[in-house]
Length: 423
RNA sequence: GUGGGUGUAGCUCAGUUGGCUAGAGCGUCGGACUGUGGCUCCGAAGGUCGCGGGUUCGAGCCCCGUCACCCACCCCA
Image 1 (cartoon, rainbow, N blue to C red):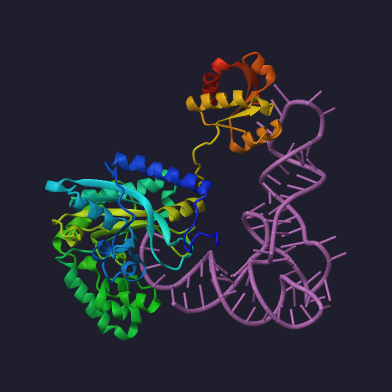
Image 2 (cartoon, rainbow, N blue to C red):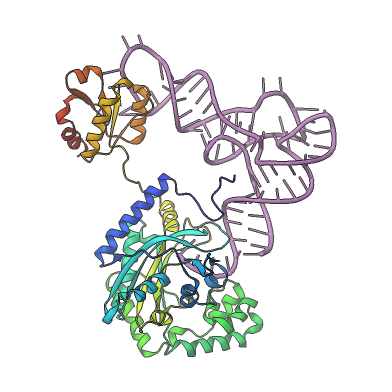
């Protein structure tokens, strides 16, 4: 048998998984403070949820989806991102009834069929939020501020992150601009790559994303949407920027930031770092999607959100030299002098755990010496030594592993003494 | 889908022009006067040298095939 995880997937071993749980707890606490509640949607959806929401012409839909037919003949797709599902669920359960504001966050694995490389996996985790039903620019700023706060709270220095923002316009100004770009591409057809020429007919704005140097050059002289925004979009965009400025959030406007999903309108943003991600650089990104609900047959409902990549964030953390530890697995280690004392030790260990102390002990009849080694390796702050001498007196020996102080403690006072020692 | 790179102990890697029972560091386990850690010392366990063929008296080292992984392009978290 092939004892290997499938291509593009990876096992999360304890060190990494501990860090991940810390990242998740941090998100839960922070997002709750901003008014967000958790939501869990299925890991697979009817394929249509993604084709309609994300857009047929996007890379995600046209070549990266894990799509299969289930035994009932339905076309099913493993979710490549979170927003489509959350919006679908919001509509299905009518969470936004009568104009209710909905603030949700989610976390879980996403799936895209791509060639894996550094910072890009076929299964990868995202944490994301969706703020649905709110049109004012203040919610845009709030979402962006919260994203930056999250990274900061984890320990990524502000100076090593770059926040890029742009406006994609709306139905009032984008179509005309789209046509303009399409025309621009056709006019410069000879100088642009095949892919960009094809984009003229499908998604002209994506030509800004092309990394081909000549294309980049040609596109740098293309008309910018920023200069062609309708009054409403322009006002919204400048309000967002002003609010960010008020909060001392440094950002850079990037007119070429268009992002790969069709549902974006108005505000889009991306957080990038320079180290640790290989040729990738985005650790989080998102934007507004004011027409998405209608794509699913719902009422016109504004919304926006972001998603951040767990693996990439962790790589950025590591590159910044920041270590994240999981929960302690042994604050106290109970060592026994002789394995025949097993029953007494068993009872004692359970008592300490019931008292809320992370406690570990030996189940391999190891020597006292190696039990101490184990305690040291696990980072135990104290070792409780159970021996015949102590037990005869109804006591145990407690060794403070930092100070090396040892003292006899009556069994009845043990958990209190240990709690004091652990402080 | 395209291109490049790599596959030797749990991990990181050495392995000379093909030649005796395949090595190191780290880690693990045991020990260094009888019930005790982090340092040091000693010892041990652990490898189908990715897999399958071929060349050769003999291959981890050469040839062919195959698989896997990594990195990059495209694009994104």
